[in-house]
Length: 512
Image (tube, rainbow, N blue to C red):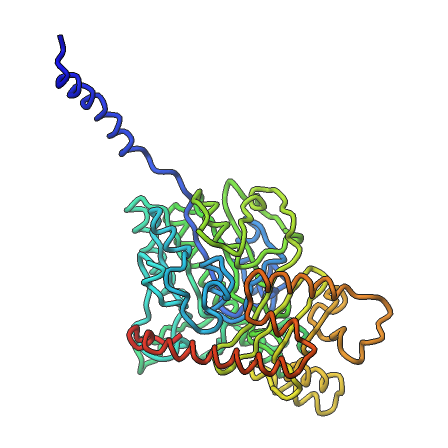
């Protein structure tokens, strides 16, 4: 006859193997993730999207042949820090806090910290966001010098060594990984033959020659720029920087192959926004925000695909990659997964993207909002009062002003880039570079109606959903006094928020 105590002991003994088996259960197999992010690269600069020069990006082109190209992938904001903040949080700046060169709000769920918690080894190299307490990167490459970031992040050999060590660590630990490799190219200053290489007086100078340079006659002029020699000279140096970006991509992908990890790795290539030329960077136009997206995923994404239909934006990246990694979505996201597209399906309601600009350092507030479709672009500029002069014109604007002295069409273009109007609307099929505003006075007698009301409605609904501070200004967009009051209020707020960052930056030894 068994006693109760013996029965209990037997039951506990029988349960022990079951519990041990549960503890030792093999973890879910997850793909590795590699992001290759260019800085200020126009969407049509890689050869597979048209090319700024012949044969400029052999490694990126090869990646496209092995995966899918998205011809309508977009950044949501055409400045680096807020653009990358959207990528990693899946939230628009209104919800992640980084409207300009600012930190993401503490506690915001983000891709590296969520992957880290799921057992991923997470690493980053190159252009940083520098909030380790938020991102919880497992390993980072931090520049050893001080001062201008333009002194580093432009040597493919540095990326090669870091990637080699990182992949070896992941294999040794038997962990899935997420590596975000951020080149500083082709952000200006562009590559100039004979002006890169190691600086003899600065051991931390980390720039290398591009593997190829270009003559002004060899480049393709795009983004609505005039075909002038000085513009071509700028583009030739830019093309060399695009090539050096491709050198980095090639180095990292070679190390991925050598580590034997390519077959289980999702590779994403994209740019944070368009190039630093007039009317592109720091704007909301298609050229400003359109990005060269390529995704390779062996065994899932069929090779050699062109997706020219779905409109995707960076706010969709975090939800998609969490989905691909078989992880639950973040507690809050403004974007949505496009995993089904990668698996060969279609998604509805992928016909518009939301683009924005706020400020860079607070006092330089020039808020803009845009709704883009494949065929139309609508922009709202509450700052445009005929006197405020937009300062972010970048390389070649002096050339445009010189041409404007003798050519009235260029004079109108320069004036528009400087002062804008409160509303802009463009037919992208006829005017892909947004050169002729259909809402301007000279276009008031249009022969056929334009769907601007629909775009206004789309924008308002989205601003309402986001509790956008600019919504009252949009509703009062025909009232100059209301717009002036909004601009003062918003500039004061942005300036205050930037100043409140100073103590954090002093502690971190870094300025956003």
